[in-house]
Amino acid sequence: MRIDKSFIHLPRHPLLRALVLVAGTMLLIGLLAMGLLIGAAMVAAAALTMLLRRWLNGRGHRHGDPDVIEGEFTVMPRATLPPTEQASTTRSGW
Image 1 (cartoon, helix red, strand yellow):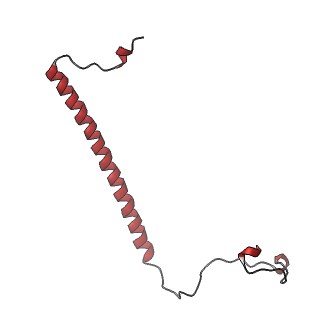
Image 2: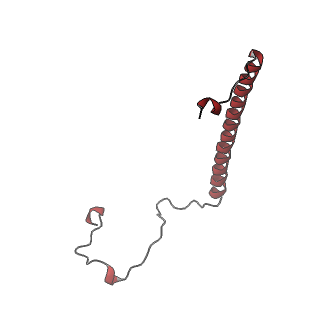
Image 3: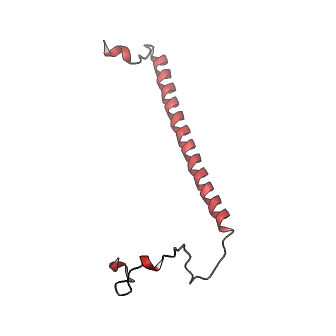
């Protein structure tokens, strides 16, 4: 099998050869530009979505006491708690 058969051959006429090369270059530039435009549109849509979500979620928030820490807690029965002598309130004791 000859390797030459797998490549595209340019025409022999110099003007036609230049026209094919310019057309190929313009096609590559056009594809690159379209890719950049689509990518920029995707980034803009993601930024707009994030801003819209932040704006919509921020409207219903109440401004409470800054000293209050909210969270979910589970009440454990006394039988599962460690004895008070060994209980530690620091993280190093865990």
